[in-house]
Image 1 (cartoon, one colour):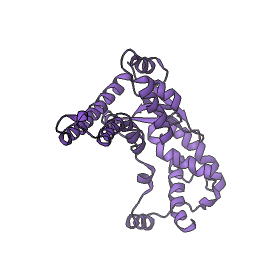
Image 2 (cartoon, rainbow, N blue to C red):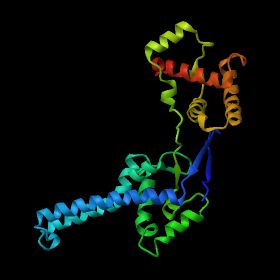
Image 3 (cartoon, one colour):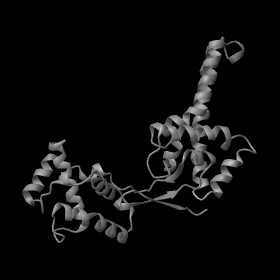
Image 4 (cartoon, one colour):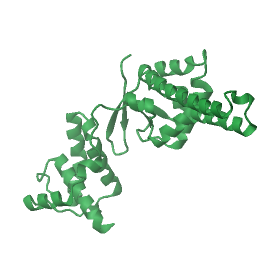
Length: 263
């Protein structure tokens, strides 16, 4: 099955491209997770057996039996909820297969979406045969490779790229020594008061710098120009000073430097 691409346009008109996970990838990730779950349940039963003379529930007290059942249930159902919440849409199986659950708008999942999609996993998607087929058929035939839980929770499962773009912090984070050296070697091409920019404009700059490596070269150049033009006019920066992308980098660098003093 060919991989489908999901394209999301943010309010700042930045296009984010994701590759949807197909049923094969998701099956392997689920198999790894279920193997970990089964191992954890075996460990719980071994511990319970050791404390009950290996007669398990027949010789257990009520509280001991209740705790054992609760632990097994927590592993069976809480495993996915806990990992996808704490690991921002990933479980050990998804991490190994480089998959991630995200919201339909591309933002990270929250506890509510994780809870709902996994509640439907237990209730419908992954019940024993023949109900098990519901989840598989839904993934195969839905436009965004969704199972029932994804439809209700408003989530999709995507593949992570083998080479991820650097984060915004990695792009703009410069040590103090290096920053002083750069400032002495080459003065800033312009000085701008970034407080004149609105939150929406600053967010557009930051989103572009963070996601630009996911764009094709023509789209990247066109989007940089579309964002940089109104910002350069507002800040009084001559258009020929820098290329649009370099201008946005310098605006963001100065915004980060100025925010340390003005916040």
